[in-house]
Amino acid sequence: MKLLRVGTAGSERPALLDAQGTLRDLSGLVPDIDGGLLADEAALGRIRSAAESGELPVLDATGLRVGPPLARIGKVVCIGLNYHDHARETGAEAPGEPVVFFKASDTVVGPDDTVLVPRGSVKTDWEVELAVVIGRTARYLGSHEEALAHVAGYAVAHDVSEREFQIERGGTWDKGKNCETFNPLGPWLVTADEVPDPQALSLKLWVNGELKQDGTTAEQIFPVAEVVRYVSHFMTLYPGDVINTGTPAGVAMGQTEPKPYLRAGDVVELEIEGLGRQRQELKGA
Image (tube, rainbow, N blue to C red; front, side, top):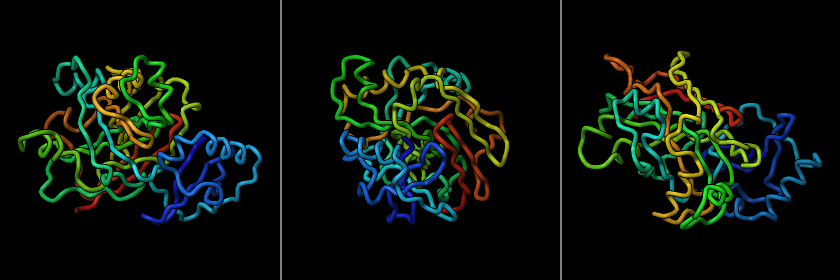
């Protein structure tokens, strides 16, 4: 299933994109799309049955904003340097264990919402990423099979980053990762049954129409199953938590001088095979 949330920011309603590409209203069936829903197999079953029967009301998508596909996100866990080609382009050695950092859940915005370039920024960068959405409480998972059984679905994430704040201003990466609007998510949460192999997805990103990133999740140093298993040994993952799993080569930081960092007025578009497409216009904060 392709689950999404539509409407003005803060007042989104749950919806479903059916197999024919028709937008359907879920608000009469479930209150929202969140961790509680993802952990409720009976509720998900009711959605599937209603979708298959064609009984869900049709929504007019004209002019309708698409919000983040998940409400009340608990935490956004991020994995850094998780693609062989990205490590090579930045001159970094492939890590021996996953590099883990966090984004605050309030960085999450809709897939087509405005991204704000922070005040004083000179190195705002782009990163297309596969987001993993947790559907069952996960702690100390023992195998890759067990890890994937705890995944509710997948989505497109844009891990916007400010490299000067991240690398040159001291401390951890957090200052360069948590600026407002720095995690567009969506358009859809695609349930795991529609993604049989998360290591066989193409990822692409364009800036002002120019293709910058063209990669595949097959290049991940630590695959999705290992990331979920590994992280569960350091923190409890709850339904509705999100894991951003890293970005392939092609970021501004990895290019020759002068590096083409983002500025107000730029347009970024990104997509992951089967998971949908995003488009953001950048403005000054």
